[in-house]
Amino acid sequence: LKKMNELLVCKELYKYINILSAIDAYNNIARISIHDTDSYWKLVFSDCVYGTVRTIREFENYLIGLENC
Image (tube, rainbow, N blue to C red):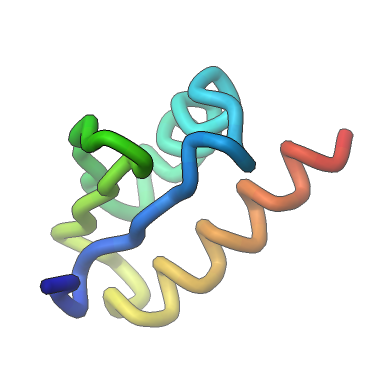
């Protein structure tokens, strides 16, 4: 069951290094922990400056941009 403060990131679509880069870029905006599962990286967001839902959406967009570079 996915919680409102979690983002599941498919391992087949996103490089781990890009996820770490995005987490680092968001260091001043939110605390993000990463957990390994079989098919996904589970990212858990807390202490979000701009609200959890908005932060997760913006983070996902940022991560997509990193993958497209």
